[in-house]
Length: 70
Image (cartoon, rainbow, N blue to C red; front, side, top):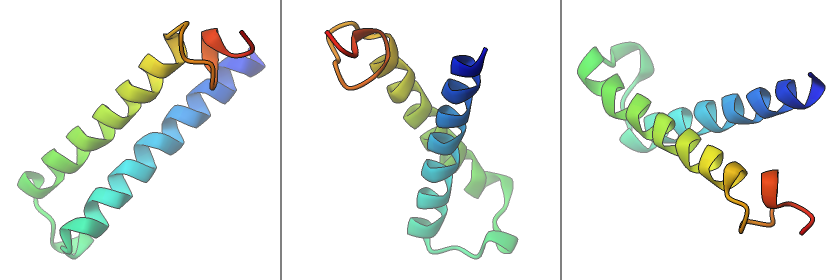
């Protein structure tokens, strides 16, 4: 159960980091952003989480996840 919490926490950090990075790079004020501005930011954050999840389940990736320590 502890490992699942760590995985979820890591993916949440990836999501928030990508979201904040996109918002900062866009140069828009967070308060003034509309749904149209948030949609690509959320899409970028989801893409970052998918990459991290793919790396976790990839047995050939030795950095972390299933392939770690091999």
